Image (cartoon, rainbow, N blue to C red; front, side):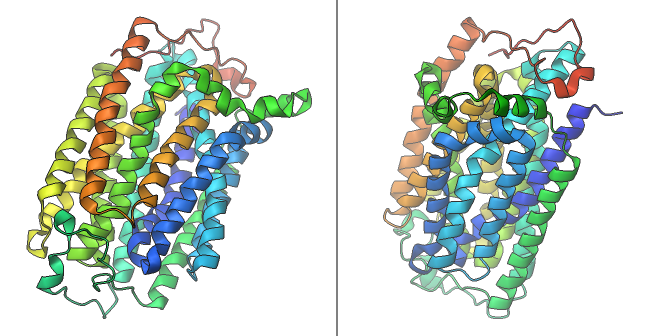
Length: 464
């Protein structure tokens, strides 16, 4: 029999799997599908700008008042609205739904991270294990299931768009504009991005809406309301509104959080590069838009498997070794992309980069989330709100300069942020190794009394 906490992790993971099957597929296609006047990339930039704003204020307020479960459901509803906006894409439909998605994005992710951290600590107390080990394991399981959404969402897009009979061969002279060889700003203007038929777009978006609604139902029906009593007590305590409103900013007094900002922002930079630049300037440019889904499926499969693997390996290798592996993998890919000239005859190479990128992203996602949960266990809501705020800032900056800078310069910027991350992250890790974060008692979460033993012992620390 699986434990209640493990069951809840599976429910959250499956809910996010369905939700991001829809959103992930749409995000991968925006730079190619809605390329006119940079509308698709602009909508992504608006999304993450809105996430920054919501990260500043909304997560602590929503989580403490609604609890993690209903905050997740409300956030999912915001994501589904973006799918509706893509039925008839235009500035007046995409931009408002992008804002709605962004406002719900930070509470959604903060509630998910808070829920997994609480569940991990409670389960650790039951089994007499280190809290950090169970948290790492739960985040690994979550990202193993969640990251596979890239496989299913992109498989749907490739199968549906592959039915388009108007897909044309790309002339040899236009291939010269692909990759970092040319600036990459005029790919769409030169005709290498062909929009599929409207009926195929409607079919795809309709499927995405359906799986998004299903995600909401799964969480609403099957997820335990683990912090229901705490939310009720908070609503009845009548604490000053500004105290909760500014919780995200108060945590910035912690120097460890400030030092982790480059690492957190890099997560946004590297994800936006693959979904925005690689798909457009390498895949769509040289192969066509119907190949975007297959390439991103490779990324999703690699990311999913590695998330599960590294979530379990972390207790043996420590975080630092895994972060080093991710940094080396991304560094190698960036250098190679600067010199590679994509051509349809090199089809396997198009899949090598997303596979390596997926391995690295699995580490950035699982270990950074777990690290925040361990270092700031007493202020989880505010900590994960900061995580989403700074990660989203990386997305916003990357998408904002997408239509203005040449691809070569974008790769140099990505490389610079990676090098800054390699310098700043070890400072926090070394301090945590010398001065472990104090123990955290999750017994206040009364909704799981039967899982808590008297010999409570949680150590929020993994070896370096």
